[in-house]
Structure formats: structure tokens, C-alpha cells
Image 1 (cartoon, rainbow, N blue to C red):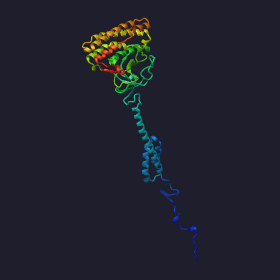
Image 2 (image 1 turned 45 degrees about the vertical axis):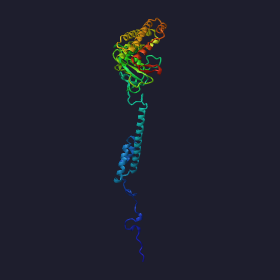
Image 3 (image 1 turned 120 degrees about the vertical axis):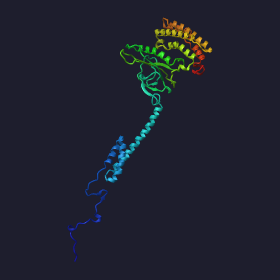
Length: 384
């Protein structure tokens, strides 16, 4: 007799058949409603910080730490940690590359002309910071446009540079405007500036003949009050081309006694010459006043030249000839200073068609061993 099987409802409990076992994942049974393992905070922080470029290095570090810890603590977020590490690494690498390239470009800029003079030794400043002897390059140019008088510099910024580097200008002296009263007329200030700069030039470079091709300029306040304010005038020598590569200051100690005596004797004549204002070509009063100074300066220099003792024999004749020429010119200049009209001034000034003593001065300097222009070599200098 066959015994029927028991009904399904009364089947005894037991372990499921092998083909009915639940799937198991790395963190326990899947699909059975169990809790998820926690997400790694380090992994999340790594990705977030790496996306903020400035914090990418920190994101890179946190990503590496998360990758090391996740296998041991069973937390989720390995993918986030990998992404944070990758993004942070790329950001750090790009930042380093930009710093290297940028540094190289900055070096090239400073060495090849990034500043006004392309030198690392320059120091930024303004015209009012300049002292006697300073070499510099002005940002706005050295001189006013041709035909413009009393033109103010609109940009006072400068680069102060070592004088052994090429430089457009050098300050040869500074002084304060005279008096404590107010001066509101720019022309009056300019006149004081011109008058005060001339003796400072001859203190700085007594032998003006030996200076290279430079022009003379100054910076001064346009007007000053009677109660204060900047009253300092700064006088400088400047060159638009053929920039000097050494200080233009001269050392009289390098000359012998005869040379020093000669340069000192010629100072009155030279100071009178450099005292000319921009108006001498157009204004009769300015022209006659300058002619009077030239007459007095020439006569004084002639007197001092004749008084020099101990000249070398070969220099006595040329120095005497120069003194005679200065005396003759002094008479011409004095006559011109009394001219009633501009036309008469021109006629008297150029009486002999030769209004200076350059020929006699050239011979005297050559005999004394002072530098002179070499006419055979296009304006170069030679030592006598």
C-alpha cells in the first residue's frame, strides 16, 4: 500500500535547498532588507575639496587616506575616494606647471625689458624722492615737447637705477626756492630753477666741455605757498639716446694742478653761457641780460687764465690766446647788451661772424692734456 506524501502546509522547517539560498553580497545578504554600511566621510570630503581648486592638495591627501582606510573599516565610498584623488592630483599638477611657467616668464620679463630699463636692480619711486647723484628713468619722458615752455610732467613716477647701468638721466643737484613768500607764477619759479641749477652743475661736473651729449632739465613745484609745501628744485642731465653707463660726476682730484686751475678759471664764462633762458631767441630783454652776463663772465675768465702760475710751457701760448679771445668777445657781448632793438642785437652779437672762443679753447685744452673732440673721428674724444 502506498503512503501519500504529507501536505505542503505541514512540511517540517529546515534549511533551504542549495538552489534556493539567498544571494550574499560583500556586506551581507542582498535583498533581505538589512541596513547599508556607512559612507566614508573622508571620501566625500576628498571629492568636494578637490573640486575647489585652491583646496585641491588637501582633497588629494584625504582621498589617499580614504582609499587606505576603506578596506579595513567596511565603509562605502571607494569610488568617491578614487575620484577625489584623481581630481586633486590633476589640479595640483596643473597648479605646479603654471607656477613654473609663470616664474620663467617673469624672469624673462625682468631681464629683457619688463621695467623701464629692463633691470632687476631698479627701484620704483617718484621725482620727489630723487637725491643728488641718483641715476633714473622717468616714466613720462625727460623733456617737454619742442616749443612748449613750462610744460609740467604729468607722470612723476621713475625707476632709480645703479649709475653703472644705462640710464637716461642723473640728478646733479637740488636746492630750495628762495624766500618764504608765496610764488604763484610758473615763469618766476622756472627762472629761479634755471638760475639755481647752473652753479650746481659746475660743482657736479666742473669741466662741462668734457660732458657727453646731454641736455639740462629740472623738476620744480609749479607754485608754492608762503606757509609750506615742497620748494625743492631737482636739476638733472638727461640723454634721449646714447645712454650713459657711468656717473657723470667729475673728480677734480684726477686732474693735475694746471688742469684744475684752467677749469676753475673757465667757470665764470661757462656759468654765463649756461645761464641762457629759453627766451633769449625771442625776447630782447632776456637776450640783452644774457649778453651782459656773458660779457662779465668772459672778462672774469680771461683775468683768471692770465693769473695761472706753473702752466707747462706748451700751454702758455694757447691759454694766453684764449684769454685774449675772451676779452675780445666780452667787448662784443657788452655792446650787444645795450642794443635798442632785436635786429641791432643780432648785428652786434655776430659782429665778426664768430661769436665764441671754441677754437682757442680747443687748442688750450689740447696743450693741457684735457679731453677734446677729435675732429677726424666724427666727434669722438681724444686726450691731449
